[in-house]
Structures are given as structure tokens and as C-alpha cells.
Length: 281
Length: 347
Image (cartoon, rainbow over all chains, first blue to last red; front, side, top):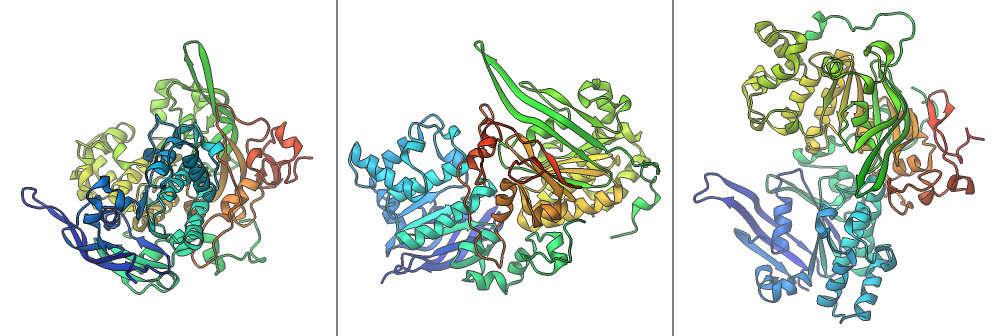
């Protein structure tokens, strides 16, 4: 079976010619996502590592300087052409970092959902679109009654981000590209969204490309992980293995940068409270 | 590190003796945004009755999510309000302000004397503290020369010695801010904030804009400098990982009020308020299974906060009383205060 997504020796360089400096944002990256079993694939790296450029190429928003990107065997540049890129967006849907910027502040949020349902979900006008929207909202733990005729500023970041996921689901994509989807969301709601990715994969068979710099959430939801630095892949493999036993020096550096509470470090192991360590300092 | 320049400095301004009053005492502080358009008055109660104190030589953490009121609280504590924000009640006392009056009653001349000398800031974006078109040296002169006196060789020597504390070469003085990396710039602002050895440093999300790899270094540096200079630090961030790493005591804010305050370790090991419990339980940790998340809904709209306890619409332990009455922050143990009817302390 053809892989869902296949990247072969993809590079992207910005600048050159008249601009003085050439920046290689992505260098010779290859990986593929299976077409049979959906997975949560995480791209991990600090700012400037090229992970967003890679995501933009997968979404057809940038063209690679070299190499090929294929979605279900078809070239992404080809899918992008014609019909407003709808063929591409029917296969892969984005979720962006800042949910407050992803929605038009002057429009009701349900407007987008209904529009997407009509354009991509194959639902016609009126009731069918509403029913499709309601179903998608239920899948992310919201309901149409909660969000109908509401403006983005009336909803919390967590609610908006779940709306963005519901909107993506309406297009019935095979792949969701989520670029730093929780970094603008409050900590108490963050895990709810990250856990949602697992549900989407397990229940609806959607693969997720999760882009983040946060090792902890990456550890919890990913099946596989790929660590990038300066546009290059430094390490990749099963998530738990990579994060518990990082091989590359840079992966180890990333892991060491995770803040460990002073008191658990002193107590030796992470989770359990040792009774002899009283509650007071 | 090289020989510590702190050794030849004056000892901490503290005079030994009776237990001293806290560096900062905030009592029942209320800061509201009040607007009036076309005769319609609107009031957002962003900080509504907050009391806490910051003691000598401690790092006091304040955690809260977006729209919990923590930024407003900082503005009110630093007397840096702009309309429509106004302080409508309560006091903010700083030990070094003569006459035990609230900071909000001080004259602008008095405030100018305090700023950077007694009370200084580390901001989230270091670019907003440093003048982008001036060399770094100029920022040091702007901020500190009038407090330390002079701009000559003696001043420069002081600055260079202080830069060593944050492991920066004196070469940075001749650089423009954009020539430095984010981590270096934030170290420059740490040096700026601590140069006059202030009694209290307010740090607002000091590492949020930095890369993960740099964040830990900068936090270590903040702690080193704080210990050496002997300032107290009021650290505000939404990132509980930073609090667990750095702070001595921690307060958790929700909907404009403090819901819990305890030594950081106690708060992490045995949180009492349902909201704190949820926050700490939902921290993802490497090597553990995914935390279970049960909390629904979003933070309250502070223009129309729910009656009674502001957490009650989301609270798993909600009782009839919570919908009517507001729980006060009460002492559960000697160093542990909680605002919840369900958690004892409030019969």
C-alpha cells in the first residue's frame, strides 16, 4: 500500500540571488507515514530548527527547493493546483498555533464550521451542514449550542483550539498537521487537547503530525518522534525509546533542558512522595 | 565563575534584630478596569481582594492562567497602572517606602527614587526593556547612573563587575541589543535589574520568550544572582515547571483571587484547592502515563464573575454554599492558606 505521506530528500532554502544571505531552513529530510496504521508522529525542535517550514511544505504553502513530497502517492504541488487546492485540503488539514488569530474576530465561529461542512464535507446547505457540524463538535467535546452565534473573543483558547480541530475534522482528512497547537493554550486545558489527538488517531484513523518543542507532551502522545536541529534530522524512532534513551548529543541536551522540580530531584524519583520528606521545608 | 565581586560589596541593607516586616505587603488589593462609553459603565474585576507578602531573600511565585489577573496584579503592585485600570481598594506597602504608606499614595518623585534602586523589573521581552537604537552601555547609564552616581570609570567598573555575575563579557556594553542572542539579552536585563541591589525584583514571565535549551540557564542565573545580591524576587509565570524549579513559596491565582498559597514543595506534593489539584495533576511528565483530565469549561468572565466562589461552575466538589458565598483565603497549616469551603479550615 502506498504510504500516506512520503518525504524524500526534501530541502528548502530561502534567500539567494539578490539577497545576500541564503538560509537553508530544511536540509535533506526524508520520512514517511504509513498508509495502513494511523499514528501520531511528532516533530520536535527548538525555534529555527525548520519544523514549521516542513509543515508549510506539507500543507502546500511552500514549494521545496529540492526533493519530493507525496501524499497518497500524489505530488503535493499537483494536488495544490486547481479547485483552490481543495483536493489537497481534503486530505490534509492544518491546526495553527494561535487559535485567536485563526478565526476572524468579526465573524461568528460557527460560520467557518458550516462553510467547511458545505465545501468539503459534501453536506449541502442548511440542515445537513448543521448535522455534520454538530457531529464534528461532539467529537471534540463541544456542541453547536455552546458555540453557535459566538464570536472568537467570547471563547477561551482551549475552546477555540478544539473548534479548530472540529473544523479540520469536517473535511474528513487523512492527516492533520498541528503546528504548536497547545503552546498558546492554558496548562489546565493543554492535556485535554493533546489527548484528543490520541482519540482522533484511535477512533477515526486520522494520522497526526504534531509539531512542538515540548518534550513532555510529545512523550505522552507520540508513537514516533523525529528531532530536528538547524533544518536537519538528528534522531528519530519510537517516541518512548528516543525520549528515555536519547542517543544524539543534541537530543540529550534537549532532554536535560527539561525543568525538574528541585524537590523531586532531591528525593530521587519523580512521582511518589516519600513520607520521610515532610511537607514543610 | 571568577572571584565573586559580591564579596566586597556592602552587606545586605538588613539590620539584624527583631523579625523584620516583609519586603512587600499586599492587603486586600482590588484593581478594576473601569470604562464608561455612552453612559454605560463597565467594570472588570481583574484583581479582587488579594493579600500576600514577600519576605526577605525569598523567591515568591505567582501562578495563574490567562485571564486570572496576574498581569493586572503586577501592574498594581508596581504602581504602573494606566486608565482604565485603577486601584479601587487595599494597600501595597513596601518596607523601604517611608511612612508605611501604600505605594499608590506616593508622589511621582518618591516613586522615581524607588524605581531600579529599591524595586526593579525583569520583563518577558528583553527587547522592550533595552533601547534598540542605543548601545547596551547607554541602557545601563539611563537606568542606574542616577542611583549609583556618575558615568565615569568607577561606574563602568561597577557595571563590568556586575556583568561577571551573569557571565557576560564587558564587550556586550558596546553591542546593540539586536546583535545579542535572546538568552544574552535576557541576561543583560537581569544584570540591569539587579545592578542597584534592589530589595525587590519583579519578574514577569522572564523565560517564556526564550528557547527551551536556554531557559534553564537563564533560570539558574536568576537564582544565582538573587542569592548573591540578596534581593527578594516576585516571579510571575503561567509555567508551573518554572515554579517547581525556582520558587520557594507559591500562590495560585484564579479569577482575580488567590485560591491557595504554600511553600512550593507542599503545594506540589499535597495541593488542597480543587483547582490547584487539577493544575498539578495535569502537568505532563516524561516517564509517566498521561494524566487524566476532567476539568471542563473555561475561566470566568471577570466582567460578570459568577457569584460566590469563582471556581464553582467548574468545581468537582461544588456545594450549595459555594454558589452564594465567597470563601476567604484561610490558614490550613502554619504556612498553607486555601480558599475553599470543601477543604476544611472554614466551618
